[in-house]
Image (cartoon, rainbow, N blue to C red; front, side, top):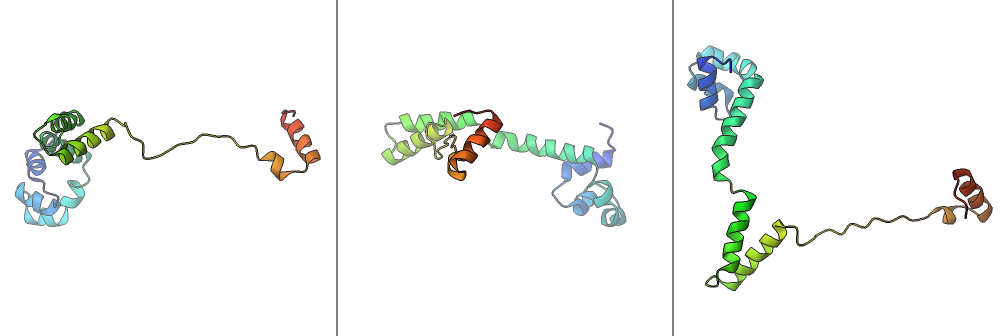
Length: 133
């Protein structure tokens, strides 16, 4: 990856504070205060490595869509669960599958030409655009 030992340590200990993380990684106090935010904070390789570290750390903690759907299905089918919980699980499962729509989309075409022009002007305009009545 082309990173120094200190840069790798910086990635490991990074906590959102460049100066503090630089100190923890073994950089000098002076470097941490004056240069860390420039050289470490703007280094794309380091930024990407930190993002990858966070992604790998968070991934097992966040349920996937399929895991949530399995859970909701289990609650919905659990006859010993309270009905309100079973209904809520059913609702969430339906929403996750887009069974319901909160928005209605209408595609339509409205001919406005007839309302904006006098009949002779309208005929001339339609002839001009190649649309005869």
